[in-house]
Length: 200
Image (cartoon, rainbow, N blue to C red; front, side, top):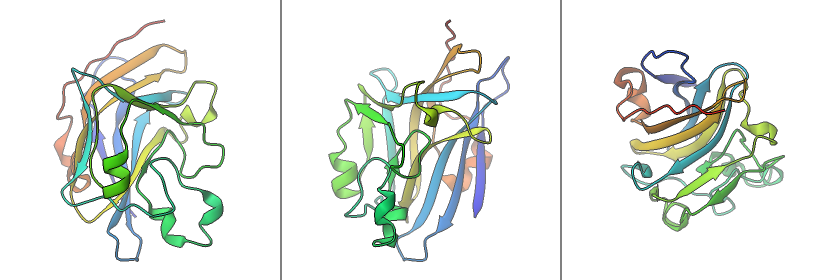
């Protein structure tokens, strides 16, 4: 399993440490599967991924994303994996979950039809996927929170806006965090504009 990390430039009391990924071949001829994570400090949480008019949410591939007929834009149904093994490699977004067991993710304002029906882009300037601080899935495990899984034979790119909290419940926000091609993540650094906003 290949791994890489997009490092955030050093700033005082950094909250989001970077964007990292794992990649592996399903062996089913449907492309490489990438799991995208937000790397955070111990005890931190990731609450939402969003797009707005200033910094739209955009995720795309140079070809198409694999979409299993039994999947959805959210984490897939674990009870179906034994019947449809390829479902585990479906492309989807999430907050901290690889399957639907205990999943409380919600979304508002994102049109998923292009992504789900055709394996196309995710784009929104007024939408979000999120979970609430009452949901255990927002909290880091081993210093990271899963944001998405994408299977494709192309090159992934895009930008994310990320909202989260420190262990002391101080909020933070990073805007226009670049999602470069996973093969280049280690080398590229932060390509987008970075903004941190703290509030109690």
